[in-house]
Amino acid sequence: MRSLLLLALLVLAPAAFAADEMMLPVPTVTIYPGDTIKESMLRLQAYPQTFRARAAVIDAPLAMVGRTARRMLLPGEPVPVNAVDDPRLVSRGAPTQMIFEENGLVITAVGSPLQNGGLGETIRVRNTDTNRIVLGTVMADGRIKIGGF
Image (tube, rainbow, N blue to C red; front, side, top):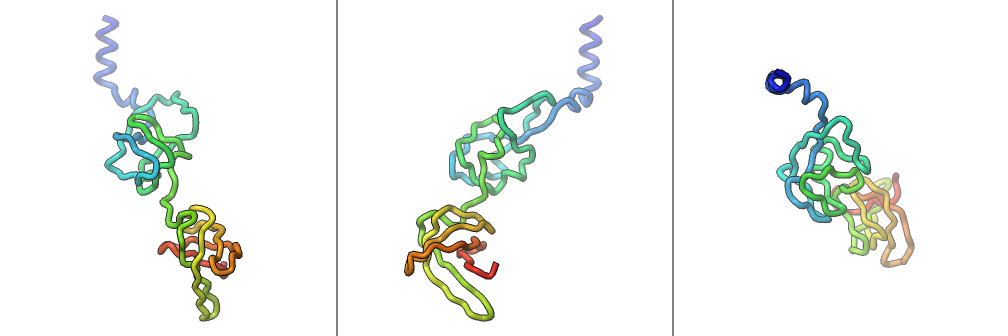
């Protein structure tokens, strides 16, 4: 009788058990460092409300789509917040155009970024002509805007 009651409870009230679960996005395939994460690489997996990861994990698939993996992400494992990064528009050491605009004056030069950068990030750049280090903001087209912040 007891097992029959338990079976009826499992069949008739699955929503009661689902309320005790949280859904986390996990990779369906191995994602390697530098790979751009696509929606097709993810699925939602149920975890009990008592689940505690070793680090803070991402709880929404859209928080990962379009970003790049900083380290290998394994299938079926929750993704730590620090394991993904915004796409890199500027790479350290790669020649990049710097642009200064003010009051109609436009000056361009070639610089060497001293760090990687994503959209809107402020990074240090060495002017290859003068060897001076300046701060600039990474723009959507991969150029670095100097001054006029």
